[in-house]
Image (cartoon, rainbow, N blue to C red):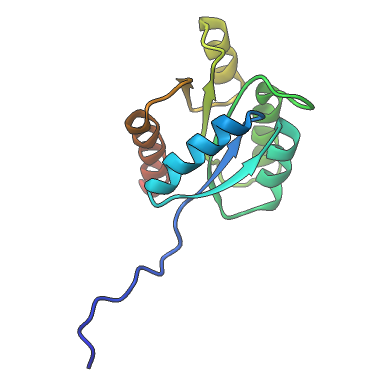
Length: 140
C-alpha cells in the first residue's frame, strides 16, 4: 500500500474573465491562477455572454464595463436574463473596472452584478473577493 499523498484531482473553480485589455487580462489571469483557479478569457461582452451560456463549468464572472461589441452592463443583463428565463443557477458576477464612479457602481448592481471592484485591484483584494463569492456558492 502506497502512503504517498495523492495529487489533488478535484476540479478547480473556473473564472470567466471578460476584459478587452490584453495587459489587464494577462495580469488578472495570473493572479487568479495563483489562487488555484482556472481561467477562461473573453475579449468583449458578447464573447463573455457566449462563454457564459455555453460553458457550464464557469463558476464566477469577472466583468469589465467598457468594451467593444457589447459592454459589460449589457452583458450582465443578458446573463441574468438567460439564467432567469432558463431556470439556470445564478452565478456570481463581479465587476472589475477602471470606470469607478458611483453611477457605474449603481448601474452595475442594477444590471445584476454581485460586487464591484475598481482597477487596478491588488492581488489580495481580488482573490479575497473571488474566494468569498465562490464560498457563497457552497453555502446553502
